[in-house]
Image 1 (cartoon, rainbow, N blue to C red):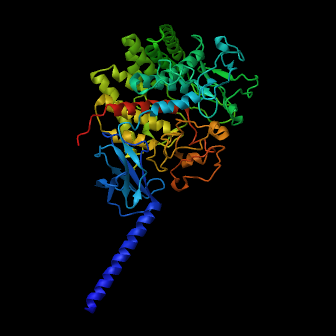
Image 2: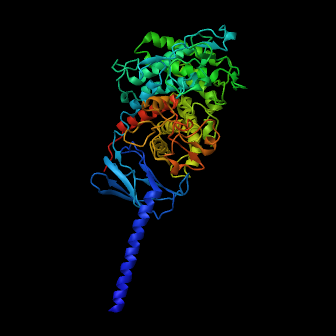
Length: 608
């Protein structure tokens, strides 16, 4: 009897110790592990994966999906492979719950760690593209609808156009367009690319966009989708930047703009009152303070003009035939301008070493030639496009883990997509193989970590992430190959919270989520104005961050626990490298979000 009592007491003590250990282990896990999700949510038929990430190792074998309202466990599943260390974490798993298609609100739980609540529904992307358009309107110069006021109304005076009959300091009308980022410079290369993405978004997904704004960006309806109004705002400025067949301009202003952080107005930094310099494209290196940029020709930017003009002419013809005809004419003269001197046009700075150091141009020429073929049906244009496609089959950043700032721009080869759509048989297969090979290069890096992160953490890494997701989708669409569907979704999920920091990279999206609140922006810093829809630059390699000029965090780092020797991201006004929104990245995101909304609308009913 005594022995039995002793055994019982020992067993009871063991059970108590086990329970205490279990409780303590779970409590410890909640402080040292996290489940990262796409805060926007997931569609019923789509890929649905979250990431468990821990700073200590835990015995993790299962996870469960719980209905947030009822508390009922709707799925219990094994966690699968431990991907090991990544960034600040020593342990990581992918939690795949794709088999659940029932709509509702849920959370994931594993080892006592709970994810934020999220939805599974067909409408999780509804309105997201239109929301992101808010940032584009807020970036407008000349008349800014957000401020209901005008700025930079004196632009500008020409530089470097003397050989084309435009003496330095000649006044030119270049007002309009968008500010490039949180500074007030304006670049033709990024603006033309942004305009193209907006036009393509309207062409490919017209039914997802609303009409809540007038052409000037103020409230009201004009019978035209807001995304097309915004694209036309870009086109109007590009027309001004190519006013004559022999004239084309590269940018307005330079880094003397950075003299102060201020709301947009009239800038007296350039020695000509409120006029700002308008740099001419002459195909030659131009001043960069004590340096010179490495411009080699006129092709990269002029070809982007060509593509935006051609797509604009096609889409606006039913609305304004005269304007469309003018765009078509501008496209031809821009294409001729691209051939003045084959090569790349880089941007100009005066005080600092930072420019858009674009080095590729054949991808731009491919896109321009492909659209010339689509518009004019001349076989010679198609052959020219293929020649350029074969000259740069893979966007170079995909084959490496680093690159200079905007060295390979745009971050996606748009021409392959446009050319593949008008090709058949071996020609189409060749173009799709170009896309597949680039994706496979990124996948080789991505498959080694639980976030499926293979995009390099260079400056504006979020822009690359958006472009890569679009390329994956285009490949799947044209090749009818779903091999990289989960990889594509992982890149979208990354943008909205399935990343080491657990934050969305888009200001205010979703409204209920963890999103940027202290970006590098005068609107938020000086006036506490929201910059809804702005896509911030994104995380950078720690080695890059430590070597940038003038970065100083202004507040305690809210994400300090998730920084690492590999990569950093700061939601801090002082970090212009990771938390500054960009106009062109946001325009690309509008295309991606529109594609997701359209895809959800087309999802078949999932069999239960």
